Length: 212
Image (cartoon, rainbow, N blue to C red; front, side, top):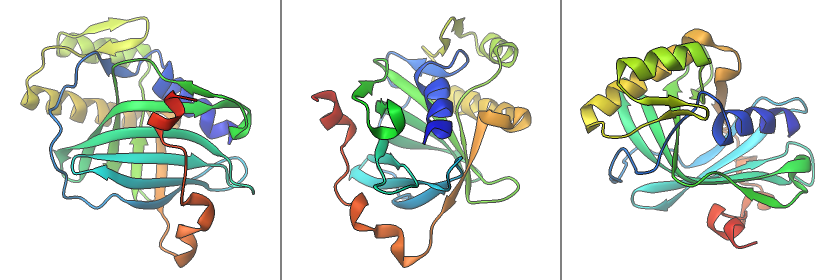
């Protein structure tokens, strides 16, 4: 899981051009889209399993598992989904925890506050693109356009009304896709019956990881 963990940690936990906020940019609202299921993310040793399930009426939980047996869990997150239109979304991450050493190390919590990712209908293949960060130059241009703070740890959102925030995330997503590389990851939904293997039934949630 090391290859994907590097990208996730760099883009989500400490990415120099990621997006975060001390307060939620969007109020949680029930989401009708059916994101629950098991997905695959390409990794160095095969497809890494991404399990997504509903936590409550307005949020989801996500878990990453190593592709090799015994399928160690490497990351847990909690997020809400904000539609941006045309099948794209902003993911408002309220809790994230990860484990080093291919899922065998202790749980480490992400920074406090809200982290943001993006989810796009796949271009040009797969089911989705999952976006994380930008180059510093692109992030500086984006933060200047929306008059937001671009500091050492990325863009810190504050004071954007919902419509302006959606425009920000749509622009951010477009820039991620244009830059490509490790700015976006292809995520492909598994449709086979083996997606619900027993080893994925009772993963450690992000909130449980907080207390370990």
